[in-house]
Image 1 (cartoon, one colour):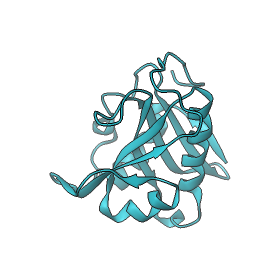
Image 2 (tube, rainbow, N blue to C red):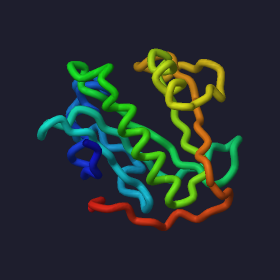
Image 3 (cartoon, one colour):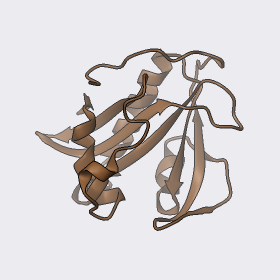
Image 4 (cartoon, rainbow, N blue to C red):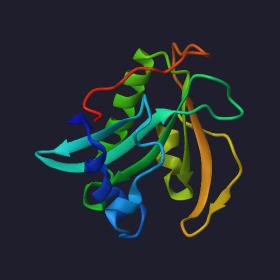
Length: 159
């Protein structure tokens, strides 16, 4: 089941999956506490197995109304079971409710297929993130999005 989670709940998976075991406190993103930012997690029983963070940020080529996805990670022992997809689908519903126009992200080249299956499209050529590897920018339009909205919505449980 997908729930809103606190920032500190994201750090262990970010460390393990995205940052090669770096100390969890080094996995905090500069945007993690911005107004409009929210963190989601998928729980199997009481175990957090997939996470993602979303915050208002327009892509420079796609205009206002954007939300950016960062820190998407799933426990490798739970990969391929649809939990990450459930997190993204939940976020799309939430962002539709605040009239976001699109979600965009930088994704590792190995995850392009995952995002494509969820309706994202490639919007860049491949580029290298130093120390991490090849990435692409991807974007998914959200039906009902209204360009030019101002995001001042505070999502639940985001202390």
